[in-house]
Length: 145
Image (cartoon, rainbow, N blue to C red; front, side, top):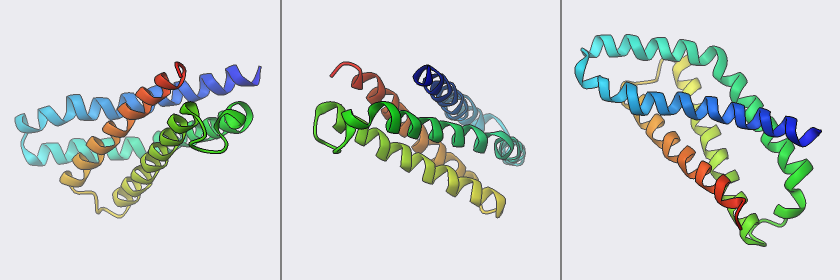
């Protein structure tokens, strides 16, 4: 029973996190050219405010459930890292996830310190979006090796 619960929590949080990032990259960025800079700054400030309220909770649940899946379900298939095709893909996925976590913490910190510029906002989202696409590809590929 533990596996389905961890998996549902992990997938739900991943979908929410990826969805938010995808929205920002695929919808918010393209409208930037159609809005005045002052309005775009207000939109970004609103997103920062909202994201600070619930995204940390989503990210914490995502990582706790991922660690739970690794520790309880996948440990023997993964450890030692790079020992098999599955282990290699999972190791790369973990490295990318840690990179996303570092991006997220850095972005939240910059937002709280009022150091989040529009350029930094955009670059962070593009980088996290690319990471997330690779993580999804790796997750799906892992099931077929």
